[in-house]
Length: 227
Image (tube, rainbow, N blue to C red):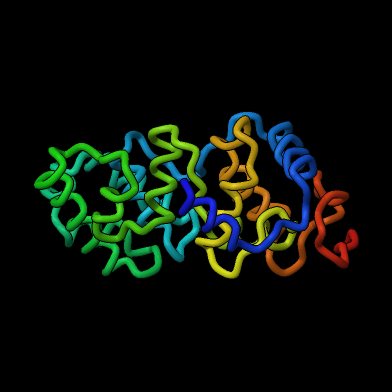
């Protein structure tokens, strides 16, 4: 506990107070009361694969690539039986598809060999899977198993820093800062709300401040005017 408190103490200070952060989440929850990932999946295994494939790719692109793949292989055993060449052919429309196909085969085999074909629920076990990093593990823990994790991608990193909710120089700092300041009642849906806000409103080049539910709280300046 003391180690965690020291870690939090060393983080950049939020530019918003607790009430303002809670108000942001409340606004985002009203817009989308039950947020979920936009990746298509049918079980924890297909979720792990989809999230691993989404690195440097769009969710829309991944969904197009995995529709036929998951219809044929929705378990580790079926994926291994399909073979790397077939997997690669299914996902060739997404970035880094050759390396990702190798990872899909390797993680499927590891799930069979080390986990009885069952996707583990802990971060330490998940990140042992080829192609699965901290962000992917956090998504799976949250979406599939209901843990209040914070999966910091480029969207969340931007929103957290831009709004002043949870500044950080890297995704890990932002993750810890968000976990520290996010009220418990919003913890489960928090990373979904922030991702969607960054994807559709608080976009990278020209944020849509004129159409933002939390513009009056956000510390970003100057606000983008309506086109």
